[in-house]
Every structure is written in structure tokens, then in C-alpha cells.
Length: 390
Image 1 (spheres, rainbow, N blue to C red):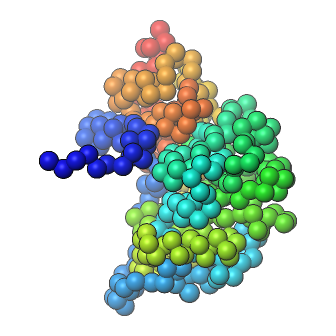
Image 2 (cartoon, rainbow, N blue to C red; image 1 turned 45 degrees about the vertical axis):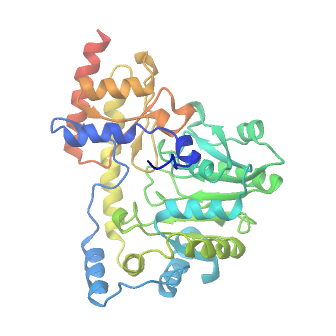
Image 3 (cartoon, rainbow, N blue to C red; image 1 turned 90 degrees about the vertical axis):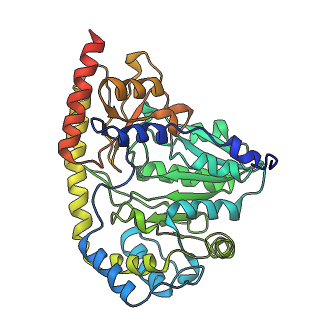
């Protein structure tokens, strides 16, 4: 019998409940899932046509580890026009989704025992990625009263100055939908310069902003070019999650290290996906705005409905496609309440604790789901909750 060969880092990974809840939702025809973290839209027709075109041209071989030159040129133009960031091809790497960009950036910048400041609640892969690299995740508590924005006061409280190397920010945010204001970003920038940190700025939802919110890239702020790795993705903006294509832009030294590491991980981002992503950037952008408008329509409905259900308190998310209501009044832990909704309302949600300790008391509902299904799910939740509250 083979000896126990599984590495300790596997046992140290957090136990996720998302897979369990979504498995139940997928196998039960009477369950409506508000759990997905991907667009419910298919990739727009012109993007599908581009993929077919490049397959016919036999774009089925390896690409350079840093990315294809023509994609980099398209990204350079996009970053300057949309984000106010000026870079050259040496400052860009194409990756297998922005999640791989997070991994490569951390592999390039932290050694075992070094600290990474991460938002809590925040995207569920940040903490485990730091841990598998034997780094030290340092949660930054985010509070509803602060609209779930990072504050320098909280960072000062938790930072371990002599060991902390990196700060991860996510705006617009998963799971809270928060869009950081310019004032918040400028305060964070001052903190970063003071402590000589690298910022990994995860901007996967950059195009999905609503009301008066405006997405601002930290890398566009004066003097921040040498401190920021900007990570972006095609998954949300262009409904291309299955293409697994994203990119990072930042200091040449770090991009060079990431490119070298890329050779020993996935070698390169998929060639067909790189070519298709280039066409997505160069093509018409109306599809992006059409999807954003539909998400906005769903957002307004789900927030209004949630705040009308006894026991729910939901702040107004101005980005991404998630609602993150406070459910503390029900007297259950987040996981317990999510399981209760699954059993009694036949609606799948994600417990806030999937996103960190400070997600306790909240659940995440995705409105990357067809409008009518969201309405039905909320009807079912309301009927179940009304009975519970009696």
C-alpha cells in the first residue's frame, strides 16, 4: 500500500462549503441557485466567431510565456484609454485567468513566513493562495458601517511591519460589491508608500459598476506605477470564463519573474484564448454595456426585494454582481442559515464565512442569474422567512 504522500499544505486548505451547496443545487431540479460567480450570459457572438476563425487558422500551438505580442499591444491601448495606466509590452503578462496572475504575482514577491494583507471578507482564493506558498495571510477586517471599504486605521492595527510585503485589494469587490472611492484609494496609496508594499489590485469586475460609482485603477494614481500590479480578466467583462484568460500589468522586474515562473507552471495562457481576447478588446464594446445594464436591472430589483423581507438588511452594492445582505437577526450562523434556506426555501446561496472570518452574519446572493429566476428565488425566500419569523 502506498504510504501517505499527500502534502501538509493540502490539509491546511480551508474546507469550502460552496461545492457542497452548489452540488445539491445542481442535482435538485426544484432548487434555484443564486450561488454562481460567473456570468449567466454566453460569450457574445462576435467573440465566438473570432474563436472559430482562429481555430480555422490553427492557433493550437504554444505561445510565448509572457503572452502574444498582438494581445499585449491591444492591452496597452486598453489600459491607457480605460484605466489611465501607461505601460509597455515588458510590463504585461497574459495569464490563465486572473486567478493564475494572483498565484504568479505572489510566487514572485513573497518568501515563506512573509505577510500579505488581504481583505476580509474577500475573494475566497486569496488566503489559501498565500498559505500554499507558506506565506502569512493577514486579514484586514471590513465592516458594513464602512461600506466594506478598507481603512488605513485597520491596516495599521494588523500589519506586521517587518514581515509584510504585499497588500491585495479588490475593487469592485467580490463578495460585497463595494467600489472603492478615489479618497479611499489615495489613503491606501499613502499607506503603501509609507510601508513600502506591493499592491496586487484585482480588478476583474472593473466594467460592472452602477449608479454614480466609477472604477479607478490604483495603478493610475500619481507615483503608484512602481507599487502596483494591476490584474484584469476577460471572464466577467466579456462573459468568457471558460476561455481562462486574464493579464497582469506592473513593474518590469516583477513581470519578468512571473514570466519565468510561468514556464514552470502552465507555460503560457491558451493561444486560442489570447487571440480571441485580442479581438474582444479591438471589437465593438456595446455587448459589455448591454450586459452591465441587465445586471443593473437585476441589482435594483434584488436589493429592493431583500430589504423588504423581514430580517434582511442589505447595503447597496455599486459593483460586481453580488448582494451581501446582513442576516444576523435570524440568530443563525451564516452556514447554518444558508443550509436552512437551501432546505426550506429551495434556494442556494453562499455563506459569508466562505470569504473570511468577518463574513460571519452575511450571505452572498449572485444576480448573475436570469431576472425571472431571481424573482422566483426571492419569493421562495420570503415565504420561508415569514414562517420563520412568526
